[in-house]
Image (cartoon, rainbow, N blue to C red; front, side):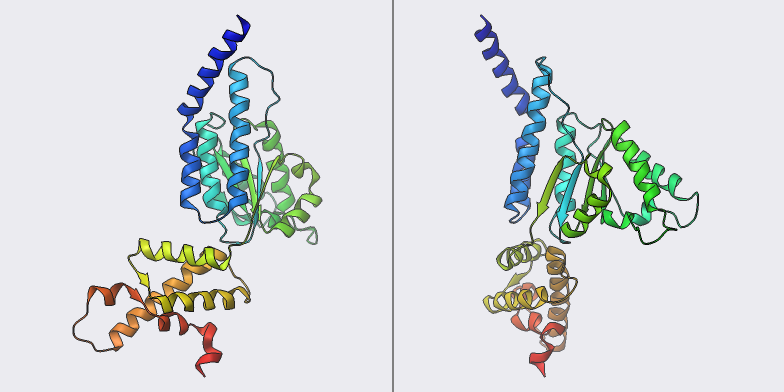
Length: 298
């Protein structure tokens, strides 16, 4: 009789899983983002843990509440904000937050420039984000131990209180470069102990960046010639060696400039009749005329 009851519960749990539509969100994550294999796997693991906790609770099994606060580490342009948006959806579908809302902020939104300014700023941001997810980008800039007159530590104290006292009402995601985030957590052990889920975002490979580039161009109804694709690989290899490389963001910026050069090339050619193919095609020269290749142009 007991085992029959267990089987009935199992059927209900399967139904519960379908009702949450979590698989749809995980499939979207898989299809919308190029690469990021370890990230996708980690998000699936977190989603599975949260689902099982919810199901155990529903059938009267005891289970300690899972920590929901997270840390997303990696270089700029590696999909952290996009994944955070999906995570907000997952948490909402599973009933852990009241709304599928992601509020993204940086230090400037939280820290004031004079005494008495930081607390109201921080509290207002937390109030706006309540019931959803608050994503603090480059969170390490909140902590500046070298500057005695810095008010970032005040913001951290208020955030810590909310992480503890309102943990069922607000989920925090701290994001930034891994090395800087590690130091940030070392300096703020109270904060570190409350962040249960750490997700590391790898840099994209050159192949993945070209794939992302093609998807961006496809959205805008452009295509690369085979020579232009080779030029794009060369561009990526050079750009990676320069400062402020931002993965997919740098890719988007590079293609925006390539489109501008294509338009200029077409305009300067004085060709009276243009085909549709002329308008959608990016040639190798549209990429190779980037400043990155200046040494080859001399």
